[in-house]
Amino acid sequence: MSKAHYLGILSMTIAAGAGCAAADGQDGDPSGEFELGALVAVALPPGNLQASVVQIASEADLLGAVTSHNGVYIHDQSQGAWYFKSGNYLLGIEAFTQFNQEFDRWIDFGTGDKVAPAKARVVGHSFRGQGWVLPSGGQWPASINSVWVVGTDGAVFGMSGAPQGIPFGTEVFGSMQTYGGALSTPYLEFDGSPSSDSSRIRGAFSFNASTLLGGHSAGSSAARRVGLDLGLGNVWLYGTPNYSRGNGAFQKTETSGSHTMHAEVINNNNDPVTNVLVNPFSLVSLAWGTAACHDYSHWDYKATSPVTVVCR
Image (tube, rainbow, N blue to C red; front, side, top):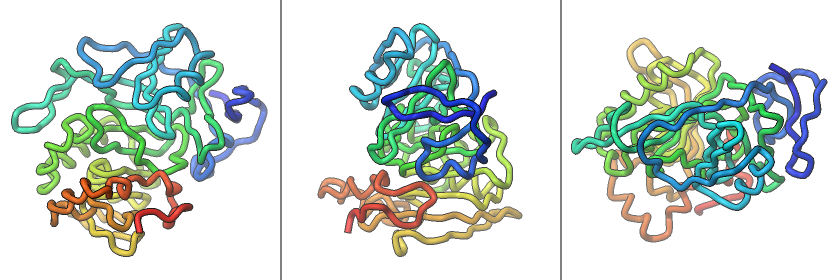
């Protein structure tokens, strides 16, 4: 692997020969220095993707596809790479899964006629409108000791509500709700779906005490379960249904068995999803225009206050 800079969208080149930066130094503006690895080519299994596909001939067409579309898969035909563009992020897909949802709202992976990512990686980002930083030269940011968990978004890895600056190389997983939708919400109540998510995600990533772990919406509920199961102390939960709003940003310590989790909870004022397990009727306010309060893209990852005040 090499270490290099990704530059902005005007040059789209790599400047080699720079020094090394640790993964924790990637917070904030992620267009600086990070380690590069090989691009991942992945085959699409039989079934139906749950979002439209933009076909591009080569990497040279990636910028145009990213800036012209949102909530779509992008397939680089020359390299066999698959991407998902959502909000401020471009995810490189490392593995797909087939799945179906049973009548009891549980998700059965490995079979079924639906296809979605099983695992992805943050490989591109437009940080606060400063321009897209995208893969180049057949390389992706190398995987780092960082995990993000996605919540409900109709069987795609929606990142539109995610905070700014999730580090390049962060591995991205879907929660049960990513695949099952809002109808799986009752299973959050007894920690059923987060417990299943935790087992699946822990089996696909080697966590350790310093892993940076975060999630949004139902994804934060799954991330919380992972943090509890492992006793992690670098956990960031945005718009979580498990906790009340508190003062907008607050620390939460929980113990499960012999493990203790220390988390930062970031909840916008009037976010209808926060504390929904205690007060499910708060979701009714989504119809009153409070859905924007569930969007944390005004925040910077690992910050306790937004750059722009929202949802007062």
